Length: 294
Image (cartoon, rainbow, N blue to C red; front, side, top):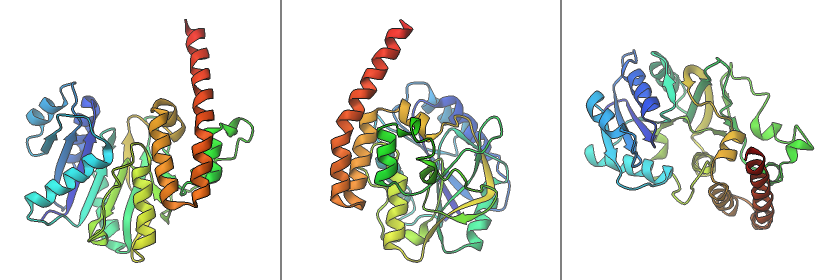
């Protein structure tokens, strides 16, 4: 078995995917790895590019659009099928927008070897201007999710600071609640006989749910951030940008699933009642914006 399996879920992201793969295969260090690319029915030539330029990568070209969690679970099952039910010690879920440095993978793998209690780790991520991209989050609470839905930041600017961990020191390693999914490295020894990603989620909450599940059901595994390795993010959106650009109904559905699963039922009901109000005002704002543009 190799030391590391790298899984990349790509959806019409040819240019970034090509750069991502180039940097992976340019990695230095004494370790072995396999790359698995799940192409989510792209129509931008991504499939042909991977086949031509990266023959060592295992390509899974979907004929239909499927969600992130389901796609990654399929890849994990394919890895186990190829390897007679076995999987590498480490499993990295990597966004195609990220570009690893030449020593990123070997450095983070060494860090994981030195920290056997770590089940999930994230590394330092910077944007094109060299600024740190926040990747650490507290677990969602009713307070911060209502603040997002009602856009309370305009009235209370610091209402999301605790959730977003705005004072987090990205120069130091630390145990955290959850890691944003761009660079999501697992020690698979910590997840024997455990479920992978919850496929009911359609946006954002898959990795949060996974970390939550880890802390609740596996006392021997932790989630950590480490600056041992670094990646360059060619997109670099923050969460608020993603929420604005993604279909709000997808976020709503995932948020409600998460709260129904992990929180008191009354919190789920409150969010469910608030969502129609949030969607109504969001539609009004979008209509006014379009009218101004026209």
